[in-house]
Image 1: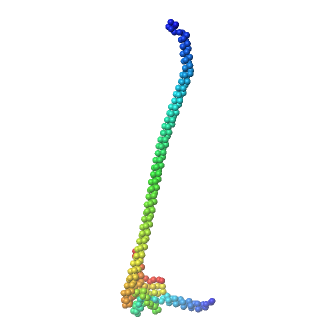
Image 2: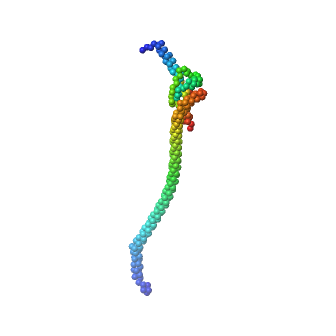
Amino acid sequence: MKINLKLKEDLKSFLMEKIQKEHNRVLVYSADKLGPDEKKVLEKKFTDLNWSQAIYQIDKSVIAGVIIKVGSKTVDLSLAGSLSKLSNTLYEID
Amino acid sequence: MENLGIDGKLLLAQIINFVLFFILVKQFMVKPFTSFMNQERKNEEEKNRMLEKLKKSEEAGIEAEAKMKEKMKKEFDVLFIQAKKEAQNMRADLIKQAESDALEIKEKNSRLLAEEKNLLYREVKDKIIKTSLAIVESTLKDSLDEVSRKKVTSSIIKNYQGGLKVYEN
C-alpha cells in the first residue's frame, strides 16, 4: 500500500511535535495539592522549564515535598527521596 | 763238654729246635702280629688325621658361621639404619603434609568464617536499615497531617538551591 508522501511527512512532524511536547511536559508529584504560592516558587526556582502545560499529581508515597519529572529527567525534593538517599548512604558505609 | 755234662748232640738239636722255633714264631706269629699292629697304628693315624681334618673343618665352619653372622649383623645394621632414616624422612614428610593440610583447612575455615561474618553483617545491616526506614516512614506518614506536610513541602521548595541531582531515567 502506497502512502501519500505529504501525508507521511505531516504525520511524522505531528508525531515528533507531540513527542517533543510530551518530552518537555513537566510532571509534579506531591502528597497534597500544591497551592498557588508554592507553584509560583517552583516556577521561579526552575525557570528553564515550561510550566504552562505542567501537570500536578497527588502521590501519598512522596510523604512531603515534591518530585518533578521532565521527560527522562527527575528532580526529587521529597521526604521519601531523602529517606531513599539516606538508605543508600547507609548501605555505602561499611 | 761231656765232662761238663753237656750233650753236644742234644745241644745242637736244641739249638736247631730253637732256631726253627724262632723262625716259625717270627714267620707265623710275630710278622702277622707286627703287620696287624702296623695296620692298627696306620688306622689309628688315619683316624687321628681324619679327626684333625674334621676338627679343622668344624673350626672353619664355626669361623665361617661367625663371619657370616658378623656380615649379616653388619648388613642388618646398615639396613636398619637405612630403614630408620627412611622412616624418619617419611615421618617428616607426613608431618609436613599434615601441617600444610592443617594450615590450608585453617585458612579455608577462616575465609569461610570471614565470608559468613560479612554476609551476616550485611544481612543484619540490611534489616536494620530497612526496619529503621520503615519506622521513620511510618512515623512520618502517621505524624504529619496535611498542614504539616504542606509546611514541609513549602519549606523544601523555598529552601531548594538547585544543588540536588537530576536523575536521568
